[in-house]
Length: 592
Image (cartoon, rainbow, N blue to C red; front, side):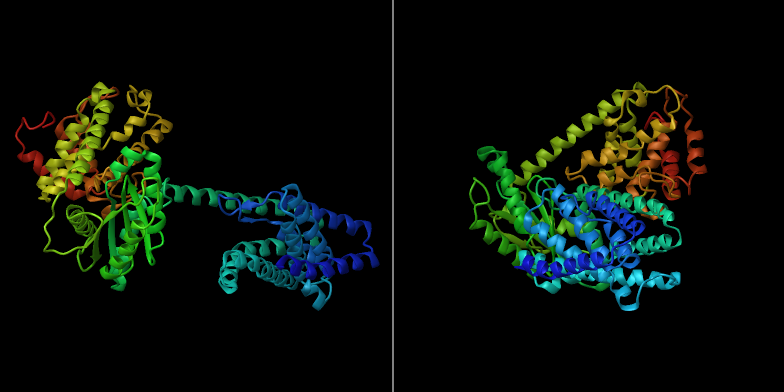
């Protein structure tokens, strides 16, 4: 019906265009010019730029040539160029007949609308460039308006969304791309009326626009994939940490509460063992689909059977939403394993915690209570409840420790690949722990520093031996490869539940003045644990033999730390390390 309506409007427009051209045949020169614009539009339509990875949303720079033709030659030529070019491209790509008719109609109508300024005010010959540019901008605006107005109809009908809710975002999203094309069309028109051959100068901006669109698309896809769980399509642990920090910042600014809901699938190991991993995957995907329906919320999967939902509501509202999910799961078979249940722990910021770490601890405590008291229930955090470890939790902790042991063995393998770094990670671990003790950090943080020291070089497992054991200074290209090891290490530790150790390792080569890597963080923006690791790592490296140089004395290494305090190193950490060395007995470590 909608296609018929569009075609009924476009048919007389195209018929009138043909009649006008037939009555006043163009000269061979003008016909050649029109043919050139048709070819340019056709090339653009045959190579559109995808706006998403599915290829369903595309933008073509053919609009540049259509709008220019409408102003320079008249609406009748633009309508025929647009319709013929679109038809050819759609036939080549083997689109359906209905889509072919609709797109031809839509392009013909919007192209004709682009020529209305010359219909209303006469031909452009002799116009001042400013007025010509105004004609092009008005024509481009009319072209966009008609294009989006017509396309929004079938989108609204097929998706069951109100027309105005499709039209407004369409104008907003398409406006940016069409604005760029309007400027290019204005440039093309002015170049054409000045000297036709100058149109070749438009190749550079058009190529740049297409290259930018493709690069921007690839960047968006890469950024999304880096923060997306492959199985469920939810945000991964990295995306969760980012979203949690942003919500805390927003809550501090607006004084609006939000709730953290941690979710575990009950007896998930049993599902995998009895029904197989495909059934387990179906359970996770089914639960993810349901969690994604929670209003005012974002859902994430950490890995395994662990999920989180950040709800921009108070704890009671969040509780009711998660209870709805639990009831839905109980009545729905999301896999061949039948119905599944989940346990939920809920804590609210700032009512239950005043920091990110504390909020996670309180939500964890509520989750443990749910698991220990029968599962298939939600628990709102209360400071009066006692944290009880269930057998399942102990089993999960055992599995986590096993994974950590495997990670530590990988580090030992990395150190063993080079005799000169045989105990490097162990010594860095001892020094990081000593610095944390000197700074009077809490026992939990000191334990994390000890672990971070052991694991800080785990990413070097991905580096070739030719670089790790090179008996010389590394080349710039080799050093660029080495600089990736902190990123590799962070990826290897993701999902092991060792926060914030993985983030400390990711940033342990950031410098106080911002000259480090991978993100060029500076000052207090660098995680505190990373700053401690950097000092411990640098000192151990300077006081150890390397294939390309001999070990320096502790005094020389300490002087180097002082010389770079405030540029490479945190001055407070260097000062604490100095106090530790001054008070440490001579046999504490080989470096003292």
